[in-house]
Image (cartoon, rainbow, N blue to C red; front, top):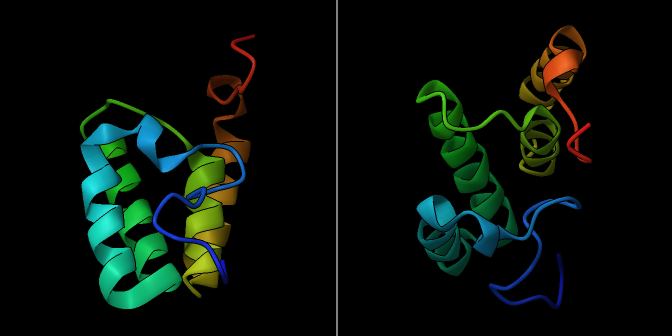
Length: 93
């Protein structure tokens, strides 16, 4: 996101500081590789949380993959959101 510092939103849904487990990696990646690097770090961090059964944010993963230029990864996570739609909710319902 041009003109934004390291406090940018990692996705339209989730500020990066809401995930302290991966926020430091995202800030470091942003400092080195700017936005695309930060989005790669964001997707890697969310995938690690998913692999550890700590979180499932397929929409955010799709957004991060798309923003970093990985369309195949974006479509994979959109498909996962659809397949597991009963587990995906922003409103807790």
